[in-house]
Image 1 (tube, rainbow, N blue to C red):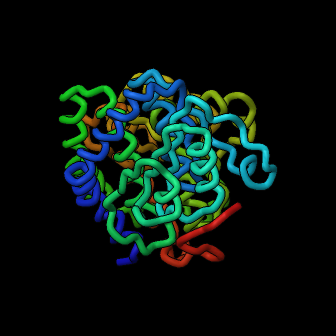
Image 2: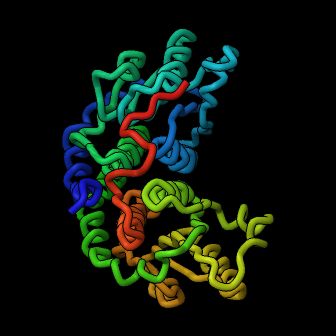
Length: 345
């Protein structure tokens, strides 16, 4: 078994550890956030962490009435013209905590007196030192280049902050169920070799998600790019229909993330459009009707709350990306030209 496959399978345990060991810190940070009452949130991140930040836009907006924007780190580094961060909650999300551009945003926020929080797997990192508060991921060492358990742990940390800000027992109870649901998703998608074989020579994919799982579309597409070197473009249904849908014709593969929730009907409608264009449909879903319409069905366990569905829905996508790389004769542990830690300015 590859290192990345091992770490995918460690995710339920890692999430359980985060919930057990990180709750007190999340609640302490949430108390500080309520005290400071920031007007908005700025999140600095790159790569998979940036996809976690996309989740936070929906999470904090829907449950905490906080507007969330993604930072533009090059303004702080290359341009030396950092925008005002006054009255903001500035969050840095980074598995390693070592990328200078992310650190620069947190340093700027702290200079301006903003509340700063680092979410990282390395609590002794430069990012952690630059921040007033640190929420460790407790994911354990992640050696594979392609991030998996640090990604789901980042989602979990953000979900814990949101739940702690709202301070309702029901949301914590829902969070406690996630490790078991992630395990169920792993077990339901354990054997994908036959399913991916059809796409051995695929050169392009679209990956579609909406709402909370807009982030999942980006993360699954990234994993396919990293491990199979194909062009995988993430879209929301609305963005796909505003032009890019023109490239889809017979045999074009499309992976749709369609977990139950308020946007499921919209994704089902998009699948009808893709059917009309004779696209090859791959579906990640807990809805039997959606799965029945797909050429390849990647099932999710039932009963996952929509606000937490990205922590579970990404798991079949990770397994799909690894299986696809293997069927193409590639080593998912050794993506060409990549290193575990990428430091950008």
